[in-house]
Every structure is written in C-alpha cells, then in structure tokens.
Image: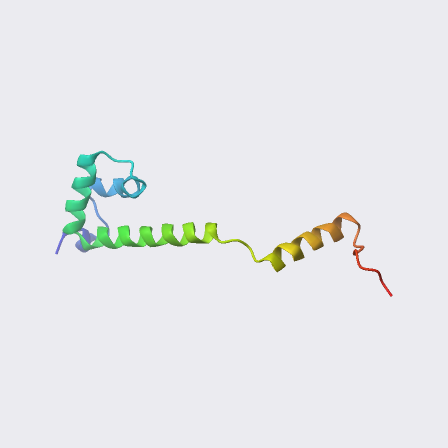
Length: 92
C-alpha cells in the first residue's frame, strides 16, 4: 500500500502539480514524473480521474445552448417588466 492510500491524501509535492498537469502547463519532465507517480498511487489517480470528469461535465454544460422556448420566455418576461407588467397581447 502506498503512503497516499495510508494517509487518504498524497504528501508528494508532485501531486500539487496535478491541476497544472491537467491544464498542460508543465515541463516534459514534470509530466513524466506525475505519470510515473500515478502509475503507483491509486489515490492520486482517482483524484486525477475525478478532476477530469468534473472538467468534462463543466465543458459540456457550458457548450449547451438554452432551448429556444426558454429564451423566448425570458425575453417575454423582460419585456413585461420593462413595460410595467403590460403584455404585448391584447386583453379581451
């Protein structure tokens, strides 16, 4: 069992660079060091996998467009507020 598994978190300084690793902001040597470390540390690998999943979900969510009926409803409500609650349809 590695120190990381025993402690529940990794005391290794390389793990502090995990986010930079995910961002592609490390030197080639640092990337290799982290890869080797994660090959031997399930805790760090799980942390890496979780962060990748979170980033993927956030990225996918940010790319989704709002449904047209939602946009239309919001714009309609904004117009109602601007006109003091009056709607564009005629009352009978």
